[in-house]
Amino acid sequence: MLSATIVAAAFSLAPLVQGYAVSVDKRGSSSYLSTCQHIANSISNASAVFYPNSTQYVADNEHSFVSSSAPSACSVEPGTAQDVSTIIGILGSTRTPFGVKGGGHGSNPGFSSTLGVEIAMTRLNQVTINNASNTIDLGPGLTWDRAYNILAPSGLNVVGGRVPTVGVAGLTLGGGYAFMTSEYGYAIDNMAGYELVLPNGTITNVTSKDKDLWFALRGGGNNYGIVTKFSYKSIPQGQVWGGTRNYTADALPALKDALIKYQVKQKNDTKSSSVTSMIYTPQGIVTSVVLFYNGPTPANGIFDDFLAVPTNQTDVGPRSFSNLVNSIGYINVPPGLNGYYNGVPILNYTANVIDTAINQTQVLGDQLSKLDSSLVFGTAIELFSQGLSTHGSDSAWPPDRSHAYFPTAVTMAVTNASLDATITRAIVNYSSSLQAAAIKDGQDVKNAPVYPNYALFTNTVQNMYAQNLPRLRAIQKAVDPKNVMGLAGGFKL
Ligand SMILES: Cc1cc2nc3c(=O)[nH]c(=O)nc-3n(C[C@H](O)[C@H](O)[C@H](O)COP(=O)(O)OP(=O)(O)OC[C@H]3O[C@@H](n4cnc5c(N)ncnc54)[C@H](O)[C@@H]3O)c2cc1C
Ligand SMILES: *[C@@H]1O[C@H](CO)[C@@H](O)[C@H](O)[C@H]1NC(C)=O
Ligand SMILES: *[C@@H]1O[C@H](CO)[C@@H](O)[C@H](O)[C@H]1NC(C)=O
Ligand SMILES: *[C@@H]1O[C@H](CO)[C@@H](O)[C@H](O)[C@H]1NC(C)=O
Ligand SMILES: *[C@@H]1O[C@H](CO)[C@@H](O)[C@H](O)[C@H]1NC(C)=O
Ligand SMILES: *[C@@H]1O[C@H](CO)[C@@H](O)[C@H](O)[C@H]1NC(C)=O
Ligand SMILES: *[C@@H]1O[C@H](CO)[C@@H](O)[C@H](O)[C@H]1NC(C)=O
Ligand SMILES: *[C@@H]1O[C@H](CO)[C@@H](O)[C@H](O)[C@H]1NC(C)=O
Ligand SMILES: *[C@@H]1O[C@H](CO)[C@@H](O)[C@H](O)[C@H]1NC(C)=O
Ligand SMILES: *[C@@H]1O[C@H](CO)[C@@H](O)[C@H](O)[C@H]1NC(C)=O
Ligand SMILES: *[C@@H]1O[C@H](CO)[C@@H](O)[C@H](O)[C@H]1NC(C)=O
Ligand SMILES: *[C@@H]1O[C@H](CO)[C@@H](O)[C@H](O)[C@H]1NC(C)=O
Ligand SMILES: *[C@@H]1O[C@H](CO)[C@@H](O)[C@H](O)[C@H]1NC(C)=O
Image (cartoon, rainbow, N blue to C red; front, top):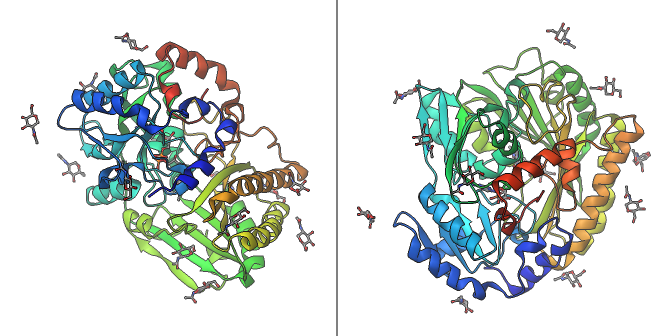
């Protein structure tokens, strides 16, 4: 359970969070109990409200980082879109702060948590294959491992997340980097439609015919209502090749060379993808490389440079797509930690950028692990082909599809909640160092769009949406004149 201290520490950041202060209310959770009762009396028996100390309440408020959880007054698990409409109506008319939670992997405090009413989407967890329309519907309560496991026997797939337990909802609303992004684009480039409960309670189906909401929902986060169904274009899925290879600290120089060589080969290669995570340990930097090839055998020796470096833990080979996703450990963050991640768009992982990452990981890691030995600090270098952004039409994000930005993901987490400000400063400082190294190499990344799903709360919406911001604001004003979605945290426009 959450202790009061942890909550206080997490929420002391509130004033820094864009548009987030609105969802923090000094009256505290108990003042929202009447809203909870109002909801409980108004929803159908497909849905239910839960109170503190019930197992459902605990699960509904749980997040992958302790620091992004909050003790809501109650939680509600809607079972139908109609009940979501009823709930949003009550929250709007009573001006009650709320959170909307999919997989709970957002790391920014208050983005999917609240002291008011936490809406946990868990009951909306259907997977529906529509053969006639070649679409697949996923409920917003699903996590990617579950969705892929259910899809596996069909030979069909969608373009979605790479790591188990991450939510379908948040990932898709923010953009969605997938293993197949070089081949098909972002998750948002492969959508067929959305069932959306608008801020005024109207349930609507958004498709490409709805110019504005179609644009806004593809990358615009939780600013336009609550999605109750995501419809994806279905794609055929055969055997894939890949998994994880881990390397000890002494392999780092060889891996740096491998990464640079792979990056050149991959410029053109749409079937392969890799995530190289450099992870701090007091004994040195260990590296975990996830390799993916959309086919049973990697062609053209695309991964040979990685495979030539001796590994001490390997789990790569031909397998089913769902089996591959389930095998991914990524940067292992044990439960109970307070932490954040941030995204740093990079155009080219040059030797200088990689060296900066290595040096800073060592220096900052040594400093921070002295303050808290449970430190988890890793940098994920994600490579795609140069065409990754060319598969989709204009969308809220990315505001610039003419460049191939790679969304470096930095994760830092510790047990000690009192180190919150220290960790925040460190992750910002480290991110700036990476950007500075790229700029020094002549890369035009000063105003590169940050990926909203990786962005630490210190980023501004200008950083993410750039020239799309005025249009996104106008659409938001039109569909949500009373700013109901402003009662939920997140990057507000
Ligand atoms: C281990 C790990 C691996 C990751 N891997 C990838 C990856 O491969 N590709 C990638 O692109 N990103 C990845 N991410 C980032 C990921 O996309 C974000 O963390 C995303 O926010 C997670 O979605 P969620 O549903 O789990 O999060 P939540 O915290 O539940 O939600 C995130 C945001 O979405 C909003 N939201 C949730 N459900 C709804 C809904 N139904 N309607 C409206 N708004 C809603 C919430 O209010 C919140 O603002 C990863 C993150 C982690 C921690
Ligand atoms: C829920 O309500 C419906 C219609 O009112 C009813 O048919 C059904 O039996 C109820 N289900 C449960 C589990 O109570
Ligand atoms: C929940 O349980 C804790 C510890 O058992 C207790 O201190 C607290 O008062 C309980 N809260 C509610 C709302 O019942
Ligand atoms: C839909 O197509 C898949 C894959 O071809 C098949 O396994 C499934 O049985 C089909 N479902 C229906 C309802 O026809
Ligand atoms: C949304 O589309 C589905 C499938 O086409 C349809 O059954 C449903 O009635 C539509 N809902 C609304 C609110 O238009
Ligand atoms: C591989 O190396 C890592 C880092 O040194 C170590 O933690 C792990 O136990 C090693 N695994 C094996 C199987 O040797
Ligand atoms: C990239 O692909 C194009 C077209 O298929 C080809 O002409 C070119 O030689 C390829 N470049 C590399 C580096 O593989
Ligand atoms: C590789 O390391 C990562 C990060 O520590 C871990 O999650 C994963 O399980 C490891 N994979 C293998 C094959 O040992
Ligand atoms: C990255 O920089 C290297 C020089 O360090 C250069 O050879 C390569 O072409 C660049 N790649 C891209 C995609 O710009
Ligand atoms: C990294 O550290 C080494 C040794 O301290 C130094 O020689 C090198 O210049 C540093 N590189 C960068 C990019 O900071
Ligand atoms: C947690 O960090 C604070 C601030 O640096 C420090 O005063 C405190 O001793 C630390 N607590 C533990 C248990 O290490
Ligand atoms: C990071 O912090 C150090 C020490 O406070 C400072 O000297 C350095 O300029 C900072 N780097 C960046 C890129 O902000
Ligand atoms: C709800 O908002 C939508 C989108 O702005 C609008 O089309 C619809 O008329 C509104 N419904 C009601 C009942 O006000």
